[in-house]
Length: 53
Image (cartoon, rainbow, N blue to C red; front, side, top):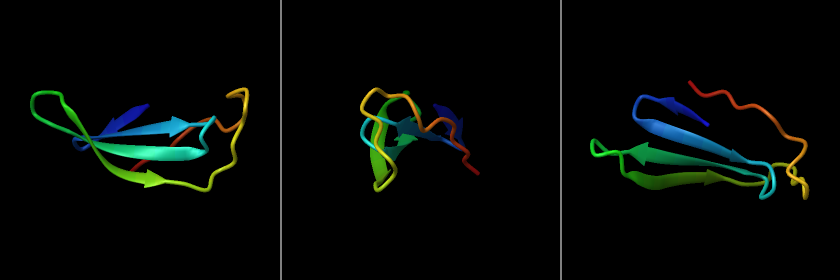
């Protein structure tokens, strides 16, 4: 997990996606994007690391 300019990005190796959330001033999260099509790893072992700018 990482945060960047009021956004939180979550990498999910099991689902093979990355989700982006907007972080509200009260700490609430609003899903704003999901990137699909990444390799899926049933055991959650595999895809590691995320970079955001």
